[in-house]
Amino acid sequence: MIDIINIVLALFSIALGLFGWLAPRYTMKAVDLQPGETTMGFSEIRAASGALFVGLGVGALFLATPAAYAMVGFAWGFASVGRMTSIILDGATRKKWIFFGCEIAVGVILIGINIW
Image 1 (cartoon, rainbow, N blue to C red):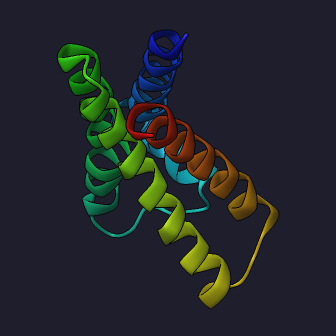
Image 2 (image 1 turned 180 degrees about the vertical axis):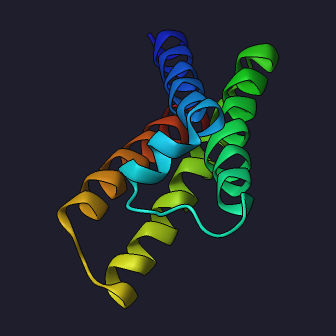
Image 3 (image 1 turned 30 degrees about the vertical axis):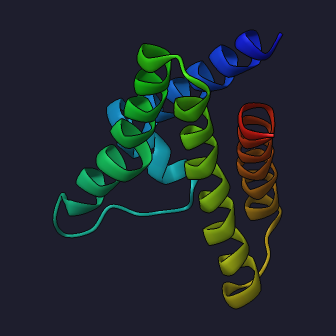
């Protein structure tokens, strides 16, 4: 069962990462960002919100070890820390809480089943 959860959440990371990597305009719209005068915004979304999470998922599936899946969990978990920081310092929105819930859930599940 743990193997199935690990694979599903790694594939989830890959799937969401693909949106950021290959559809940055859609991703920017989903997270309320606007393109700027340069294409640097698209570049940042493709890298930090896209290919990074694809790489995490692919790497975990390739290595297929508890440590690899836990590392995906740490990445998602710390994304939730950044999101909560924004909720506290920048103000809460429904969308931020939804994203936070997703990030903390993936992080806690992957860390929990692979380390403890």
